[in-house]
Length: 583
Image (cartoon, rainbow, N blue to C red; front, side, top):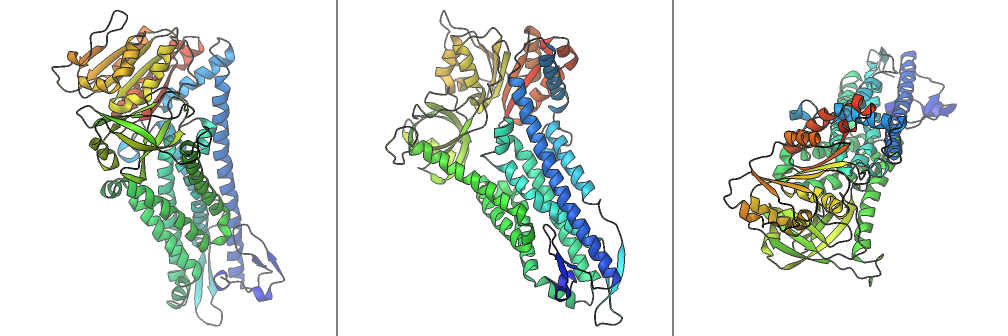
């Protein structure tokens, strides 16, 4: 380490500490050019640590403001005083301009403008503060005991270090964004999977920073420092450099295996497990590469450990019945499998009465009859306090094995619940429109079942798109409960089906008929038509394929008008809760 930092520690009168870097020898006994270079190295590094701290403070401030705004809104109600109207108007304004799909969907996918705005702000900060706070100079300095041989020292080294600091600082941020046991979700109420977009792009940024850091120091050590190739050979075999190479190779593997084509080629389960293992080894390699910056690696490891530990704790609390007065032995739950002649099966799971969840939350299900090493997220279509019921599209892998169980019982292990309560801000006077595609009905159905129990003074409608009209059999018991209520139900079947009407029983005297329509629904028109017929604020819940969610998001955004809401015209206040289901 000492030769690399061109300082003679044997002649030091004092050592000046620097957070995240080796101590500096005081006074500098090198040639004037090398001393000036060291001034730049340490000043640039100190500012880099400061800029990383400012980044953390800014990110923490955003989370706190978001949490405060959400908590502030729940206590205001829908009175016509200035404060509630102001908050409603601001929320309407934000939805109008941030809900729509971001541009460049081929690059960013179907994400909102708000997510892209947050990413752009982070990227801009990193781009600016990777360059500022350092002077751009070059020094030609003599090599000791080698007359006529000179080193070229420049700002390239400090710049590469600055970029490396940011890559280290972003590592715990990346893990925080990927955590299922999400601190961010607990603070803001935003479901953890909505942070996946930012997690992926923070990973891309770390990859780019690591490439720049590696290229920068390779140029310095292989080209600018002399004599060559002696300097390069001595540099590459140093312990810290060996671990740096290991960390870079692991990061490249992480990045390649995260690409869509790799996930399709190797499968999601391989990606998930490889991601966990490689990420932890990568963090260890980063620590070994530059232990002075372990202040960034320690929180990354703590966040990773907490996430996995709490997951195991959740599973233990459920299946050992620690909180439910059970006998303390691990017990799976029996589940009955129902088939409907398609690739969709219904799973009815007998769970303890004390296993509660909020509407909109989901559980991870493991099927021991297939493999205990895989789990998949599913949303219960039943109300909290009832036995769980799930709809599963058995495409391939472990879920496909469920087709072998017809009317039989298979054991299930649950972990959860995860996500937030999507009805916590739902007022009795709010109009509700639920739009679902296929098995996305499980996300919106509990809302409708809840509203059917306690009829509000508002309009409620369900628009459900399925492949065939007979697919309504998936939720026949629940659909009967909706029929007996005031809720309007419209079913669109997208494939020609001569038995469409036969799929639905004739309603009784006290039951509301279900409208069956052939063809794909125009979800944008469905939202606009619904809003024309109602008075007061509305809330739209949507779950389905990306195209459906995109259309609804775009329409809801356009229907929000802050000026009208400020004047007290609540019809222009349209909230949206969405859950993408890529089928």
